[in-house]
Length: 111
Image (cartoon, rainbow, N blue to C red; front, side, top):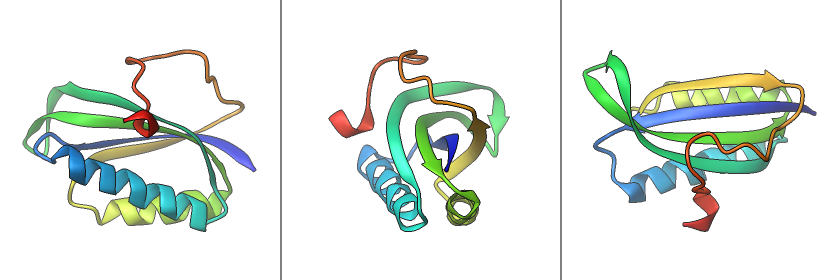
């Protein structure tokens, strides 16, 4: 299994309830496709340097996960058709850094 970090940005006008449903949906896709979620971080709403599809801000969610190529393909396929997302990015890493807190200390699973 490979280690990945995956970040999604949802539109600023999406309510917290719908953001939670999106996170749950992607968790399920990861689990169904031989993946394992290590940690999910809620980085909150952040401003963009410039507008992206007429959006000035977005909610950031960061996943640390283990999986295979099939896991990432299924996840990104689902995200390509999601209208509530502004952007997403997957990066393959050698190991997870679970100690460093980049943008606050809010875990999605705690809320």
